[in-house]
Length: 231
Image (cartoon, rainbow, N blue to C red; front, top):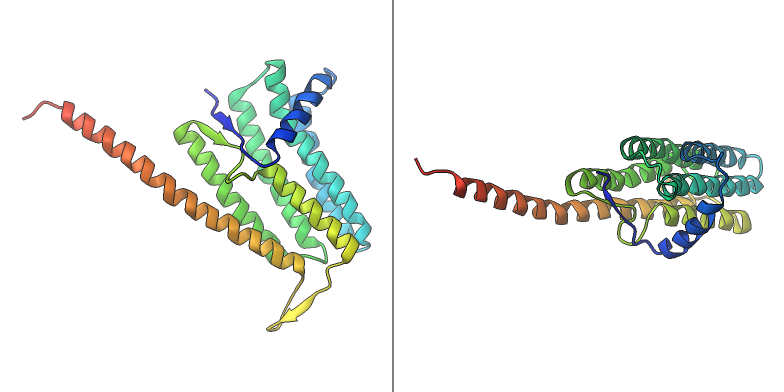
C-alpha cells in the first residue's frame, strides 16, 4: 500500500489548482514516465544554465527555465498517474524518489559551477536537503505517511527561492568580497543559512519523532509481555 501523501507547504494550494487544471488537458501520448524524463532533462538544463552563466549572467534565465521544467515533470508524473488511475505504487514511488536524487544533484552541482556560488556551499546545501529527504523516506516506510513538505516548505518552495535568487543575481549582481581570507557572495551566505536551517530541521525532526516511536514500541513490548504465560 502506498504511503499517504501529506502536503502542507505554503504554495500547496496554488500548486494543486495548477496540477488539477493541467493533468486533464495533457494528451494521451504524455505518460507519467515521459514526465519523469522531462523533469530530469529540466535538471540538466539548470546545470547548463548555471555553467553558461560564466559567459553571461543572462544564462540564469535558462537555469530558471530548467527549474520550471523540473517542477512540471516532478510534480505532474505521479499526479497524472493518479488522475488516470494507472498508478504503479512500488515502481512509481521508487523511480520518482531515486530520480529526484539525480535531479537535486544536477541542480546543486550546477550552482557550484556558476561564478556566483562556491561549489562547497552548493554541495553542503545538497547534503542538508537530502538529510531532510532521508527522514521523510524512512518515516514513510515506518509510519505510512509521506510528507511532501516539512515545516510548511517543500521542493516547490525551494525551486521558487532558487529562481528568485537567480533573478536577483541577474538584476543586481553578486560581487564577491573577502572575510578572513575567504571569498564569498551574498548567494553563498543565503545558501549557507538555508543549509543550516535544513540540518537544524533534520535534528529537530528526529529528536521529536524518535521518542514517539520508542513509546509505541515500548507499549507494544509491554503488551506482548503481559500476554505471555507466567513461568
